Length: 250
Image (cartoon, rainbow, N blue to C red; front, side, top):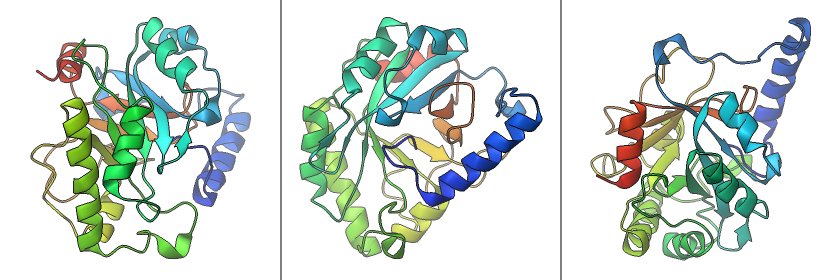
């Protein structure tokens, strides 16, 4: 996910991708997977991308974007306004996401911080539901699951989700990887019925095996920062008509 820091595992992949681009004469680093032909392309950004040229992103094929709003219970993306409002003005369907740090405060507290700082939703067909980014701890590799047991992690996610729904009327989309979900929640199936899945899987022709419980993905992050659009590259699993319907909540 496009955060405000770049974990070591992402840095090494990015260096390799840049080297490959130089060898190819600076051509596009990543191509949309062939299996996703016809699906709307999008991306996600954070303060790492700063002020984004949204007209250029749309020209290059972006149809939707998720913008980082918050992290933990204190941080707010200083570029959020330019990114969130600017993408909408350029004609993109956009939404906000929160980067979870479950060891810092409760799910309810982080949900309230998120919704109060950009993580809202309206049924206008141009606003995606709020999203929860929950993945391996980028700040402490020894505490990959933030020191929480699988049971406590599942309760933390439920607390965050319940508060987001209470405040916005929508369950959050859940962004994660299959490995993190099955490791840190014990393969919980408690969210698949009412939470859309945004799965991350790179260097692959497909989204692969999904986290426990989900039979399909709604968004697929297929590259983390080396594509033609600012930030990470994503696909929506449907048509533009279906994307607008999903945004409306109908």
